Length: 433
Image 1 (cartoon, rainbow, N blue to C red):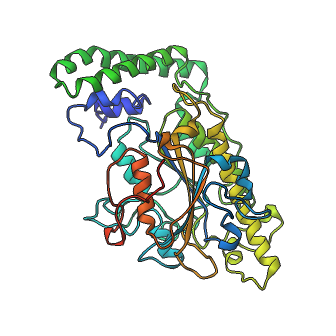
Image 2 (cartoon, helix red, strand yellow):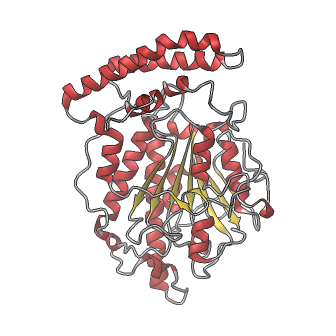
């Protein structure tokens, strides 16, 4: 039986939902909890690396604004982007402990049905509340996250309590999802462009009738979308994407340990391009998972990352290997942040990083103690003016749920709690600019 497509589904299938789709249900769409005014981020990206850390080798020295990275320390590779960072120390995951508990609580703060965030993870909650008219509400990319299947150890994103959102570990599949419509030569691209242009024309024809049915409060929204739609038409005339179509990635085996760095780099490149093309405004890249058996062999290390994370100080060489592995993750974070900093803001001033919040998250604090206390976070970007980067802030004993509230508010949302409100409400004092 032939399938019937609704207009909104057709628009999204043609890949122009990023601007056109809001016309289709402007009257029926529920009001979101977006805050009014400026000083908010356009995009949110979560960057995860596993198995906690060693605080003595992670925590910067110095004060809030004059913090320093010690030579050989884990965060030293971030020196070149130091002025784009907000480093947060001392937060606790209340009600969570050990690897599995930390992984489940990291982005949910132990939320459940009935709580303001409904048990969703930060990324999924923000994507739902933003309801951005993009092709993808959110993108979840992974690097060797699913060899053990989907469980509390391997998943950090939740659409509801106990409902995992699975990262895509295969760069070839990610490329196909993002850019498959544009692969196939000039003829294929021309056909897609013509189909999209016909849908744009249809929406413009209907906009006048829709405007007469809207109230005074909603009409400016439609006018803004009409202006954006004109920009889409110009983009279609110029070639469709409005951003560079990347080459297809080389063949990689997603679960070959030695391919871990190459898979991760391709995933970061694809994610940065998807953001530049406004295919999504909420995304994550998850490097493996808690209790990760990944072996950083490309660093000349033969032990698995999880084993390294539990080596005590009496094994000086072993600790040095773990620090080296952690520094490598810091280098990957710096690479991704650097790509955003080098990309002009599409249609605006400054760079993409100026209007993005990138969160580097971990599921534990001290890896040797198996605790979710003193868990470190690194934020990068200006978040549209919400953050004043170049600071190291310490919040000893505070709930990390307050950080998640702050990030929601950086995205323009108005919720005052995230996760279980029994552990604290409101944002982190002093984090915003």
